[in-house]
Length: 340
Ligand SMILES: NC(=O)c1ccc[n+]([C@@H]2O[C@H](COP(=O)([O-])OP(=O)(O)OC[C@H]3O[C@@H](n4cnc5c(N)ncnc54)[C@H](OP(=O)(O)O)[C@@H]3O)[C@@H](O)[C@H]2O)c1
Image (cartoon, rainbow, N blue to C red):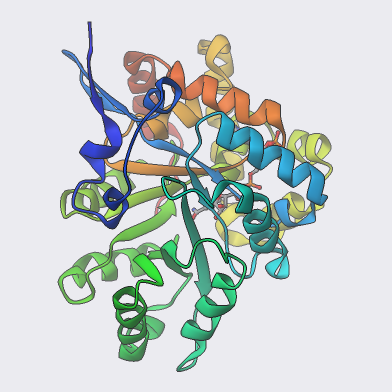
């Protein structure tokens, strides 16, 4: 029998998250356990991510999705100040408001601000965001979104982040970037800037990132592996994704954004390998792979229907066996990698 340890107490110890009382129900426990057995592993937290498409949902549908996510035990919600010109963040926080009033509420919120920002703008944006959260008064994690190294050398940004932290308006801060040069820079300058969290792309096509991810995690930085898009391309083609979602933003992103375009051909190769060898796990391998990495704490995934939430929770509670994930990643390492 695997020994169960409360995941959140174990993983978020010493972090500001742990200041909230935890009274986990059975269902919550399901998403927060470490299984200690011969082949021990830690399960990451599935996070409700709201990108641009969420901002275009109707208010009743957004409310339905958020209510369903909360009642299913999802506790972490991620958005961005500029996603869908602000509509995603607004809609998410409005839909969450009925769940945020209780003193014992253990829902965590993260949002992102795009750099470069001018002096004072960060504080202004945080105040604007907090005005959407009257029953809350703070953001759990604030990410700087897509900064260049030059942006990160502006010391006033770090001063403002520290001020916001001291004032209790933000609990933690981090950086969201896919750029390997920026990631390496952050890793090297960690001691000076004391990041709490890092959000980056990670999936079966980027196995080299494992070293960096482990290293961040070992130095106490919580890793958020944003992988929704690539996950999509790993179990369905771009064409199928556009047809299914009827969203041309995927097509535009894939064709005109070089950092997405370069995933298409390797993703097709891997999709075919998985379909041929593990047809029963086609849907679950990409997400399972990220969730079972002990160095990854949070996995933000865009989920725009209740069935999508249910199927991802199903994947979380029934992860693909480790030996199959190892076979797939060994094959992927040799045959289809997107190098930094
Ligand atoms: N690297 C990063 O930092 C990074 C990258 C991407 C996303 N993110 C974060 O992820 C969140 C969502 O972003 P987004 O709205 O742009 O999401 P998205 O990438 O557009 O993904 C949403 C789509 O993925 C589908 N999906 C959900 N679970 C899946 C699974 N297990 N396998 C395959 N497809 C799946 C959803 O299907 P349904 O329509 O059926 O729900 C939906 O169509 C945001 O919080 C964003 O910040 C971060």
